[in-house]
Length: 242
Ligand code: URA
Image (cartoon, rainbow, N blue to C red; front, side, top):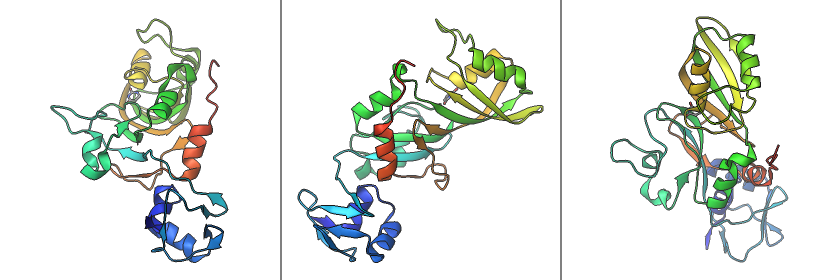
């Protein structure tokens, strides 16, 4: 048995205060009847809970969205550096691992989960899941670079990179850009800019597939995925074989 507000948080309907507000508005039912008390006890194995008309379903898996700070590594353990899991309390770590890697000095969206199948789908090179980054670049980024990114770049792999979309926010001795890639090669963004004579001085991932970083999360903060975010990640037809 578990408190209804906790159950709603854990099934992805929001933070404690958000789900309490939903309860107060009468938007939650248990076995067909409206329940407004956050402390109401539900049996997560039997009771039918809906919130805003949607069925809550308890999943055995955990999905956390983190705004990874600079200075920690994407690993479950490391002899030298602090890892992203070190940012979680011990009881929350369980079997979580980061779904994909960001460099030690890269910030932004990171999914931490124990759902190996979902992580595999997101990371599979065949699926071409889009990842969008914000970057500050030493060097003047121009339309010439945009074309080169679209054409594909030689970064020392067997094949050139897949078409990447570069949007220029500011062009000057230090430029600001958004870049969307379909792959996740080691140091990919840094190597792509290096290939055109520029240098990445700051990198932050903003989205991965259907999942977008919650900008309210400060570096190092994390939260459970909302139900709609998880549904979108799971449902996404990821253009396999595009
Ligand atoms: N590309 C990089 O160069 N670094 C990252 O952390 C992610 C993408």
